[in-house]
Amino acid sequence: MWANWLLTQPGTCRHYLVTLTFDRYHDRRFALDAPADLLPDRVVKADVLAGATRKLSPEEAVKAMCSDVQRWYLRVLSDLLGGRYADYPELQPRTVGWIDEPAVKHASAGRAARMPGEEFPHVHFVMAVREDVAPRGLALADAFEVAHRDGRLAIHWHRLNAAGGLHLTEAYDVPGALDYASKTAKRNAAYREHMLLLPFATPGRPDADQRH
Image 1 (cartoon, one colour):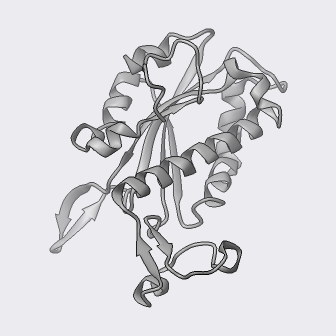
Image 2: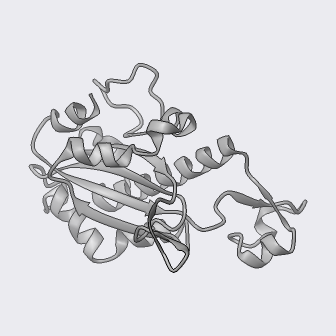
Image 3: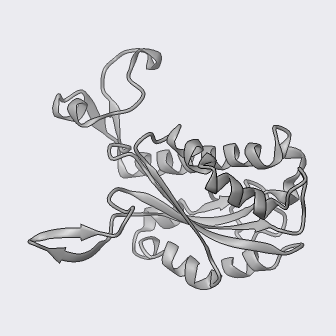
C-alpha cells in the first residue's frame, strides 16, 4: 500500500532511504522547575547522573521524536522550495517512515555491537523527491542531493539533535526499503501508531485517519 503511494504520484521521482539518529538522552527532560529559556539546550550525561532529569513515558518519547522529524522536514521544505513552500503542496516530498530502536548486529569481545549510526533511537523513512520539476532552477531531486552533499540536511537536523546523525542513500527497491524501515514497528504497537506520513495533508493518501 505505502510503496504504491510513493511510486504512483504525478511526475517522476527519485526515492531515498533516510536515517536520522536522535541525541542519546532525547527521551529525558529537565525535572527542574524553571523557565525553558533558563535551561540548557539539551540533556547530557552529567545532568542524568546528577538526578536533574526525568524520563519521558514511551508515548511521550515517541511523540517527541516524531515532532523533531516533522520540524526537520519543514526546514528541508524551506531549503528546497523557499519560505512559501506551502504554495507548492504537489512538490513536497511524500515520506513514509517509523521510529526504530538500536539493533544488535553481532557480539564482539563480550559486548553487543550496533549497526553504524544506530547506537541510539533513530528513525528510518523513505522520501519520494520529484525530479521532473525545477521550481528554483534546479530539479528538485538534484537540489535535495546538493543540500545533502553540502551538509545542509545534516545541519537542519543538528539544530534539533546536536549529537544526532543523518544517513541518506538512494532507494532503488522502495518496497524493500519500507520493509527495512518498519522492522521494529512490526513488533511495537506504539511505533506503528505513530507512523510518519508527510506531507501533513496529501490528497489520495491511503490512510483513513491521517496519522503522523
